Length: 356
Image (tube, rainbow, N blue to C red; front, side, top):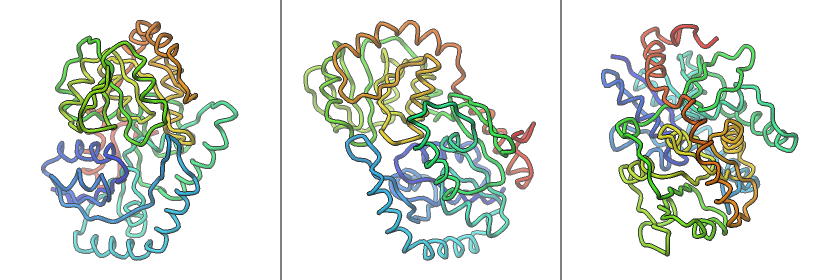
């Protein structure tokens, strides 16, 4: 048995769900999580969690608000030393033998300070670990985001970058690109054809989103925008993992933001995605950009969608489905094998090739 400290980004639930999927696979090891917000709520149902705040990202009307995000970071800076001291005391008591970080700020910092091997396991570092040929207008935001991620989220011993798209790795990075890590509930389900649409938005969306959904001549099951009720063709679903996955596995297609987890699960079930990425959000832009380029769905940059949009999208459903069938969207076994190699070797390797 090994003692593992696991830092998890607490904004949203996707990072925590991925971390739970890893920890459940290794019941022989002793995990202590460090997180905050929604992530801590998800994790504490099964594992001990130390709640330590970290810088958060602020969204309004489906765009990243730079000024509010900077203000939140400055407010956090006043507590930075306190949180780092708390973490060092926690590690002194827990005596971990290795660390894992899912887009976490504090655990990689403490690992470097203490000489503790640390494995990064997330999707966000596809921004810093890979080379991307982007449209000119997207490059300035990408460059700024990449610089911030390098500064805040730092170096680790090894990195596994989960992604449904696979751009080339940068020279010299100690990283390995792997297909997405899917939660157990996804792998248990078999996809089926259906008539309904699943619409998912995890953050406040733009004003014309619901009117656009009303224009689709199908039942639309809406998640993240209410806890029940119906308005015409819109069925507002309460938060439910089982219900969401049942609806996702049996839908015709998905309308969503640009989050990697929702996209990956939809693609695993063979469902095309109509993506509205959050503005100024580099990770969501990349996800939607590659989704469009690979022919798995469409990226929408305009937030004034007219009724012609769903017609154009549905006219290409057969094309999208054909492309999706050629993709690889489940990397669980490879990821578990590399995590096991990292733990068993004391952080010296992550399996064959060791990320090169």
